[in-house]
Length: 312
Image (cartoon, rainbow, N blue to C red; front, side, top):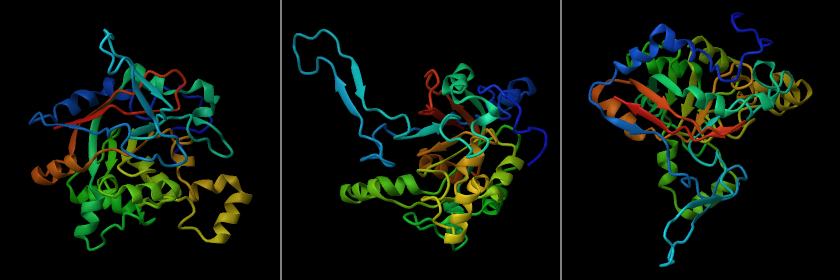
């Protein structure tokens, strides 16, 4: 990795890599100038889109107080059992530690929280790598129920074929087509996937981490459950898995979350809604746009819905 950001530096957790300098260098105004048609694409799915929830999370219960009571003069929403990672989300810096170096910037986990991101918001140039469409055109369609790896070189080639040159501070959105495919599944299929599932995604490993670092992105999000291939280890031999257990510093080769979040400070977004945006980008050939996200002001929060928009 480049030496410009040593892992031991105690970087305040509200400084998302490359995002904070963007306002002073003009990147936010430059991103705003990308708005031409005024088309707005909300990127959050419904809070209960993954039903039943995956990864052992409990279902949310939504109660409207006073509902059906003629004597009630007001209603409130009450959410019980709501997990901020059950639907579209940012994984915050508290979500995943590195097995050796622990949390981002050398900080104690309690010094992190999505509230630091909420203090500023995330605003800049968004770029879409429609990898699902690009691979299909290349004769390599993704099997959306299998742990098919997307190599980092394919992300770079996809962007190049779209005419996109990466810039520091970009928010990279990677479309696989998974979420749209999931929403078309039957209730029985979704219930089975809540117990055990596989999905295509970025190939785990330090090669992927290096590529994303060298793109100088502020964050990366995808329309699948984990950004990367799931389940972890699906692409690894028994020998590789054993080696990772014996030398925990090699865990990013199995599960690249453990490099991207705690080492590089790159937030990961999952379950992003990208199909409508992708259709519009394919129609007009513009794969860059103004991206905005307003995370929850949840003190020491682990994760948050992004409340994200792409504006063209």
